[in-house]
Length: 359
Image (cartoon, rainbow, N blue to C red; front, side, top):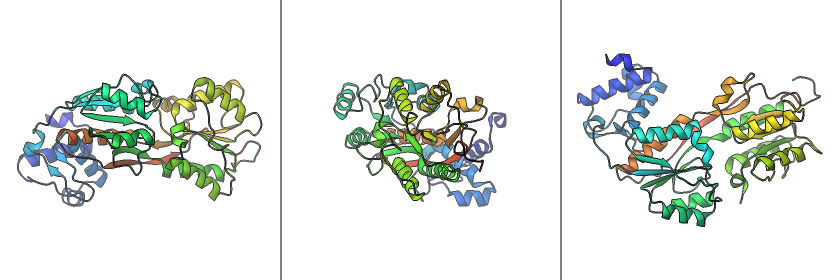
């Protein structure tokens, strides 16, 4: 039975909608979310997830925000041009990250000739000239560019070959994008830390997020500190050499004179490395310093207590990239941006300022 293969309410709804399309109930355009919620008596989240699944399968095609989705002829059996998609990662070790591995798997399952590039942006020094040379030496029909600087994404936006920014500094550029909306979760975290009495709050981010000027989340971080009456400067967003040794030197310097009471890390790998380094020096969270990481990580499920972190779901990001690839394969000029909201999860690595009574 078909029903035995369905593992969720949204999956059941997606199968039902496909059967209705094949039966000819809808032919050109799909009814909107509100109509489906009202007439099928299911939740809006279930409807949205089912419609997203049908987009991934090529049954439906998004026509933009506020517009009804177009139904693909024959309910998704219509073939699209097979294209070669290269994924240009920030660094090679990111291939094993759940979002990147899931993206590659879904692109391959969708019939695309997808692969990770042999070189990463870090290998190429995030240098536009070197990226230009590499792209010309390794032609593709479409590029997925992960966590790139503004200069690199600006170059991709100006090229005839379609590209999508998966994360990175894409704001204001005419390039497709899939990304987490970090500011809501980050703001929630900073306000909670301020409520706990913290003033010496330091965020560690990559250079391309700080230069030539701060990216939007980093600027929002500074603005939130200043709104709380905290004087800000380079101390809050320090420069550092992006290596294991560079991270150790930075942490040693930070704790030498005016130890921060909070460290916020952009990436889980930085959080894990810093937590280990500090523990070797007898600095334990949250007893001596509060720690927050701006993303989730599968290892957190094995941690007790769970680290305080900013949660966002990588799956809508992956779905958006796959939909974009389908649109490219169908000859569409898709430059839409799609974001997924973030929220702060208060785990066991934050607490009151050391030496201050519990709040």
